[in-house]
Image 1 (cartoon, rainbow, N blue to C red):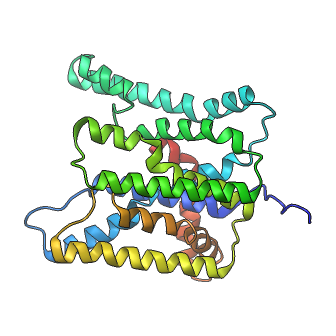
Image 2: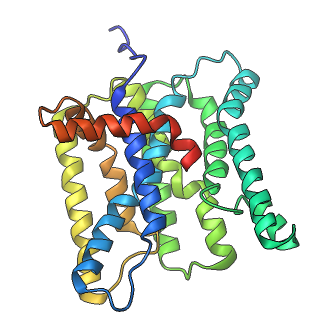
Image 3: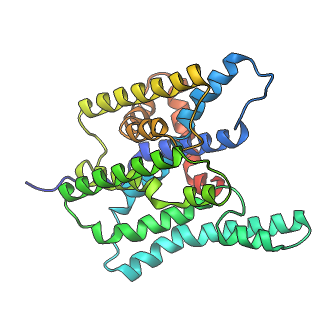
Length: 288
């Protein structure tokens, strides 16, 4: 049987990328409520944060999808191409952020330099550490068959789930929090899932049963997440919760389908929102 044709362009990826960056921006604008906030706002905050914390998983999933399509004939050329597209722009923005922070703080102190070396000077630069690590680790698997990548994804998802479960039980602050965000084990499941999906379904069109099952997992994870908030006032810290992880992982099999439907929707507002997100996609990396 001939291998499935690999599409050269999937517009739903741009929709997902643009929507994800809006969620990231939302998280940093509306990170927590106030003591005087009404009860409904607390629920609204938790629900929206559950969805928003799927943004970084979406970016890593898309990176995994796209890395399997790399055409570089050897590792040096593969590394140079990826560095030119990801690492160099990221380091440039991070250095500009360092200069801005030094100017505002009145000088380049030791703490600021340490933050720069930890990719913690500003914003979401921890993503560079994670993405570069996972991209390099992925290279030996780029030509692997679908069955091998499926097995790799299963192992990676389990490793991520266990790592997240461990972090959920810790007091995430200071150095531990910095390390947690940069720990590839937290994120490798999303990246490997993208690789496996891209090899099995290059057009990202899997059976409807897969989407329905994933939607069921999202509903269940969301219900447990909200039950914890309603009964104990508890929600995980940032991405480091099993419910958040399960919701985000399952959503990767739902968002591409919804993005395709939104682009083809007869409802003008829905179609316009999808096209707007796609328009924003080229600027996502800089905004991130």
